[in-house]
Image (cartoon, rainbow, N blue to C red; front, side, top):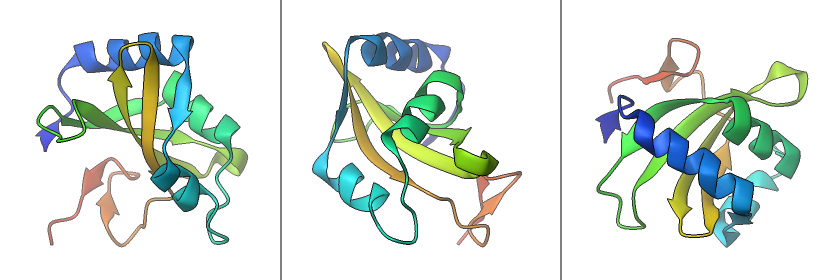
Length: 111
């Protein structure tokens, strides 16, 4: 994992999302958990307006990143996504646990 310091990946995310957003099965399962119920519109809002907080250039699924944004009622939402040719793959989306994050869900606590 690399700290978010590469603006290029975020530009690629936005460009790919304008073409198409593909929600992978794992992302849909996580979004539809009863304790989360994250909507596709919330994920789109995170992609469009959120900030990149982690960068994963060596991810086996391809260069990906973790975005932080806000959904309904301003709840924090994390989205992991990877820009591909012609689409943006949403790998997962979840509500960050306050026990695991500092700085308003921007920095992981050390385990």
